[in-house]
Length: 211
Image 1 (tube, rainbow, N blue to C red):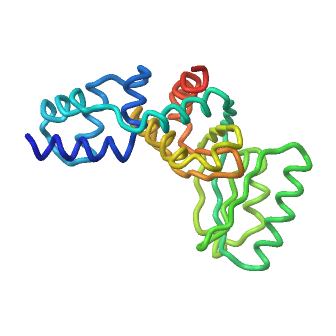
Image 2 (spheres, rainbow, N blue to C red):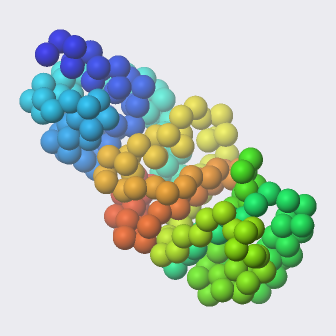
């Protein structure tokens, strides 16, 4: 019992957003306990629940900063998105640059991130078929459709706010929302997920950003 209590305390200290989601009513004690059971790989529901109820609040100033930033934030939601990753190469980078210019210039939706393994494009479904035609099957590392994009646009203070992205990510996870990909651009954070999770994600974030 004491060992579980210590592990719960350590987890909550490292993830203050878990307690914040409880205090703001986004999740209840039982939901948080079940989530922590998975994270800590224990089946002792009662011990985890008791540890949560005994846990004192930590880092109140940091949590306050998270809440203040979120209240000043706005969200954007996009459905019918796809994720296409192609190999890193000079030729592909040139192609992607042209694709970006064409789609963005015509009012379409596209985001591009260059990683160590490949170039990732998040594209609206309407433009996806034409984009796929520009790459051979050998150049395409992965493709996934039926995705949605949730964008949290926050004040510039988040650049210096340690743990802000993790804070939001954990709250989404606690609410059963499986995020496929996360990217941070300047003062916005983008979460890519299956469309089935999007309505729940919007509800959770609307509650957080409305105070």
